[in-house]
Length: 390
Image (cartoon, rainbow, N blue to C red; front, side):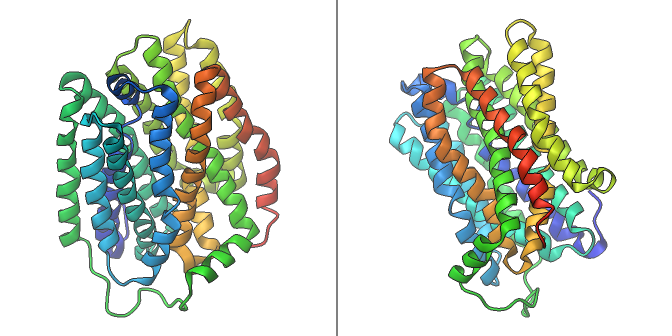
């Protein structure tokens, strides 16, 4: 990672913390079919468990973003990482469904504490290109989210689900190191921003048409990623794939997504911002069709296509975030929570229904319909986005 001298230390620790935090947010998806089998619940109920936890955490991110913009302490990122690592790591080994849901909810609450303040601090500490630094930060989070399935599936397959709690060690250690290494806030404000209320902030954000479009794009991209991450493990398990094979597939999907997040700010300057959105939103649909036509008869082809689909799906994520925060920079952490959290919360609510629909019908058909939605929507929303004034 290459940063300017003044920004190197804080951005390395923040981006590294994002990588570590998001490892834990990705560990449940590949092993959830096996957890469901262990505690005797259906795919629909398992989807609700994941979705309710995401709703509980994601919808609170804009509120935590408000407090992150107001306070002069860095405490949210430390407590957030501790909650995420400790509670989510312990969830797979719990046999009681209600206690497991509580652990997942508290762990995701920790993630919602971490993200808005960390996103705001990336913008505050950036002395060079904000898009470049945001791309690195988001890319490392996505890479962490991709490593999570690989780690959890390996541990679950070779040590068992009840040994997953060992994974919390990395998060606890990084949180304490970050506490001592991340620069403290200076006594004066880092940026001269007017005092504002939460109500006023939300009114300003909700009245902004450009932010509405960017949030819609974030929701549509989250819908693709979440649907693939939650539903496909159940499809693969029904075909006899092992925990590690499922985890490795999700790893490749999300890893290439992280690479896309890293390079998209650079490609944006060459191909244009609008084309970044078009590529990310339209190409996902034909790639999903290729996957669905090949996953039974040509598994290697479907695997390669699925991995590349991760690259395309997450290609526009950092561009969406940096554009949104530039619209109303005085609310950078709230907007970070809105784009990164609220969009996931909306998708999580939808997944509580989608899981039961997929269980009652066909997972492949449901995924095809989901991939078609952003493709057709992009023809209208991207044009509208670039016709809106800043």
